[in-house]
Structures are given as structure tokens and as C-alpha cells.
Length: 112
Image 1 (cartoon, rainbow, N blue to C red):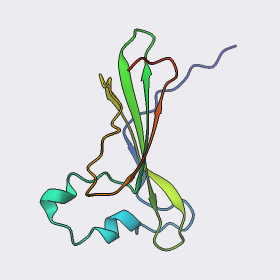
Image 2 (cartoon, one colour):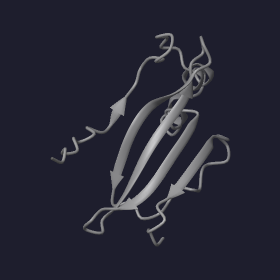
Image 3 (cartoon, rainbow, N blue to C red):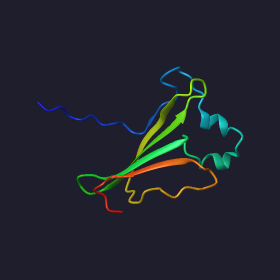
Image 4 (cartoon, rainbow, N blue to C red):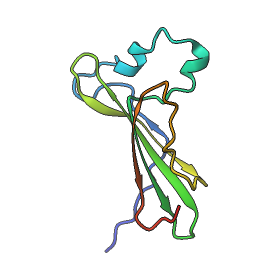
């Protein structure tokens, strides 16, 4: 008997550290004094990982995971999981003024 896959229910947000329960995050606290108009352009985590893939129908999707660091215990954990439909290009170009890390993993079968 095959088990059906349950939908992920994205986006998902994680507001506390899974180890110590703290809600204090490095990116959030380190950038607390940044001008609000700039803050909206900054990703929600220190590290962003993404993968682009094609559905069975051939529609492109991009899945994203944002990772940040707990201020209290140092644990790296996911703060947001999301996906975007219709994205055909990897977001490899990032504003150099932010200096944030990015990991891009295009699906091996995707032709960009």
C-alpha cells in the first residue's frame, strides 16, 4: 500500500530556536538599527538556500529556505520555508551591499 504525500503547507515560519526556545536571532538583532525602508529588502535569515525545479507539467518553481543563528545558544536553524511559482532564473545576483551568503542549487534536469 502506497502512502500519499501530504502537502507542505508553505510558507512555514519558525519563530524560536528548536534547542533553547529563544526568539532572539542574529540577523534580526544585528540589523535592528537599519532604516526601515532598507530592512524590507533584506532576507529574513543570514543564509538563503534555494533550488529551482520543474513540476511534472513543466512549470518552474523555486523553493527557498532561510537560516539564521540563535543569539543565546548559537544553533543555526531554519526561520522560513517558502516556494515561488513561475521562477525560471536562479537568484544568484544579490545586492553586494548586504554581503549575505547564498547557496543556489539548480535541479540537474532544469535548463536555465
